[in-house]
Image (cartoon, rainbow, N blue to C red; front, side, top):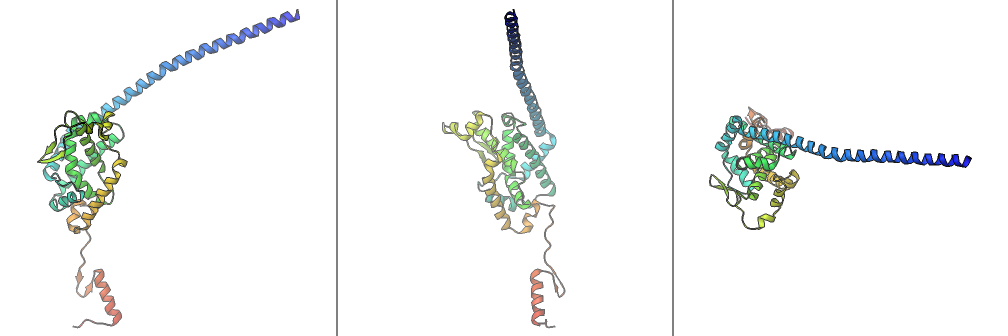
Length: 292
């Protein structure tokens, strides 16, 4: 009798464990199914949000480029900043500084504001807030020309200020060039402005396997700051050499807020320059007096 009760108890316990196991399995299956459904929905929702934000950012950039103020700033640059003819950074900076010393304060302010606006657009690309393909597809000829005209000004002013200023605009221009070179709609014809070739035409099969073409497959055109850092440093060093070889009065227009150092002057017998002070001290120590 006792053994029968024990057998029944054991059987009931086994059935209970089996039932609980079945319940756990069902709950696990339902959870897995809910996860399998929820994750793709979450990914699609996130993708929709990202695309919406990119669309809003692109609309903001396009409106910026179409803004009347932006057009006025660009017109000022077109009129007063010629396209550089030399491929050497040193020659570009020298030609610009020597030939543009008559720029007015308003023209300089317009150029600085335009560089800052273009710099902000390049920053949005760095942050992946705007798809490069969408941006360059509508703006690349204008970006290429503005970046080329502003390039020597950016290098010269960065050298005067002592820090990197507006360098993103150079990368933005290079990205627009890469878009032009890898676009089947444009690359067979050179981009020429004012008789100067800004982008050479590309043909044949070599450009199709170039690094730029491979990057274009994933919609990347603007080089990273690390990618062009060595070239930027070489160009900035060339700009510093040019500015060091010119009188301070010729480069003052690059930073109008900086006051030029006053020229040494003399008042009567008292000397103000360092060399004059040294000579006066030597005369006093040696006991020389000026004859009257």
